[in-house]
Every structure is written in C-alpha cells, then in structure tokens.
Length: 345
Image 1 (tube, rainbow, N blue to C red):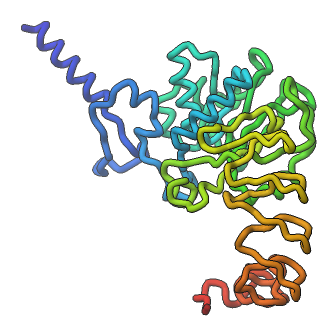
Image 2 (image 1 turned 90 degrees about the vertical axis):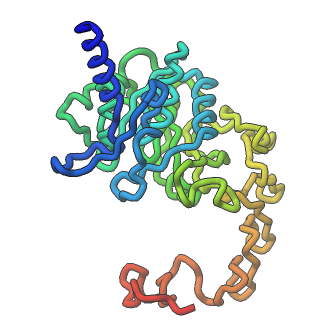
Image 3 (image 1 turned 180 degrees about the vertical axis):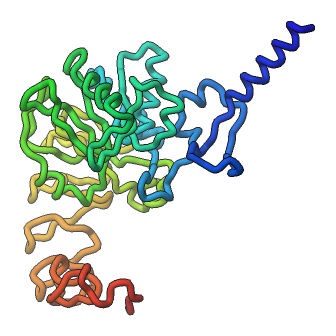
C-alpha cells in the first residue's frame, strides 16, 4: 500500500511539473498565471507554440514564421550543406532544427532571443538571452562565451538566420558567413547601400547583398500574413549568398530566369528594356519608356511632373520632398505643426 501511495504521489508530481505558464513573468504572490496542462514532449519541442506571443509589446514584437517559411528555410540550409545556424530572433527556425536533430539531422543551432521564457526550455548551450539592438548578452558573460564558442568551434559551414542584425565572424578574418536576413522589401535600397562588400568562405562571391523574391509568411502578423495581403507578404529574404544558389519552390509558382540567373516570383516578368525581373511588391510592374524604368501598375507617367505618379496625385508635390502631412516644402513630417491632428481629405 505504501509503495502504491508513493507511485500515486510521483505520478501527481509529474503531472504538476508538466504544467507551464504562458507568461513567465515576476508577478505578485496573489497574481494569477495562465497555465496549460497535459503538455506532451512534442509541445515542449516547440515552445513558440506553447508560449503566448508577446505581439502587442513593442519591445518584443514576436511575429512567428509559418510552417511553409520554416520548411523552405530548413531546405535551403540543408542544400547549402550548412552545419551550424545562429538563429537571432528566429525561435521557430531553432525549434525546427532541434526537432530535426532528434531524427539524426546534422544541423546544429543556437538561439539568441530577448524572450526570457525560452530559458525554461533550452539549456544554456542552446539559448542565450540577447538584445540585438545593442548587441547585449544577459546572464553575465556565460551567454557571450556560449555565442563565441559556437562561432569558432567545428568547421566553417555556418549560417546566420536572423531578422535584423549581422555579424562578422571572429574566427575568420575579413570573411563574412552566409546570412539569411528577413526584412520588408521596401527597405531594399537602404540595406543594399549600407552593407559593405565582402568575400565569402566556400560560396560563390557576390559584390553585395541581394533580395530574394520569396515571400516570407507569418502565423500571427496582421500585415505580414500572406492570406490577408492581396499581393502576399511584403517580407523578403536578404542574403549574401548568390541568388542562383537558392532555389525557390516551383510549387508556389516561382520560376528560374535564365537571363537574371536567379529565381523570380510568379508575377515577376522579365523586362527586356531593363534587362531584369523588376517587380518587388508582388505585382507585375510595367515599363515606362519616358522614365526608362519599370514602375508599379498603379502609377502613370505625368508629363508635368516628369515622373510616374499615382493617378490622383497633385502635380508639383514630389514624394520624398517636404512634409508628408501638409505638403509644405519648408519642413519635414517630424516638425509639422499638424502632426497628430486629423488629416482632412
């Protein structure tokens, strides 16, 4: 009887242990926690689905990749024969790699993320609490040591999969490691112009970062989900790997342009005048012979302005100059006296 009691107590203790808080914060003793019971091992392997996303918090802004984006990214890493992946603010890529390791995959990964809740799931060698905006590691020097060792150990087949930050490897002087950087397409010019030239390790040399046509889909973003955007998600992948080496899924309509030597989106038609696949936002651009470039289909050429503009534009107001709120050319938006006031249309 005593032995049965001990077993019952052990079973109950195990059930209690498997309850996890959705929000692991420092709360007062009388505060209520959101809990979830009956958590199996598969759920523990995917904590981003266990924890409630902090998507309403501007500090965290946790927007999580969809299954199709995760699978595409993993396939790219495997085809490139990458062995180690540094996941910065990309917990679902890290989860997928860790799950694959159970099936004897050769991929290894380290997650760097600001969300402290992952400390309850991953050991220190698999997760470092990290702020990418000021390159700060929490937990004294332990996390930074783990990060450094991850970069310098083993071979040089490593990749950075992240949302908005890039490092130079400390182990290889003047060499960049391959990077997959998830960011909106409308930041392309700024990204390409700001990043320096580099030489790759074992991959074809590129002169600058380039943007892939692949539309990155999310599960919980109101604007970046492909099923709610007419022209698909605006998020793309910027990379320092030659675009010709990254095959986009033909099942989703992507096709290989032999003239550009890269994969293009289904709506992206090659322009013989521009000698490029010019579309960026998920629509088919049209060539303007007066501007001598391709433009969005929503624009028409205005002879008075001398450029392509929206059909209902006001001539004389060139976008990018002056205030976007009142149209005055003497000041910028941040200094506009009407800032914060309702705009009359």
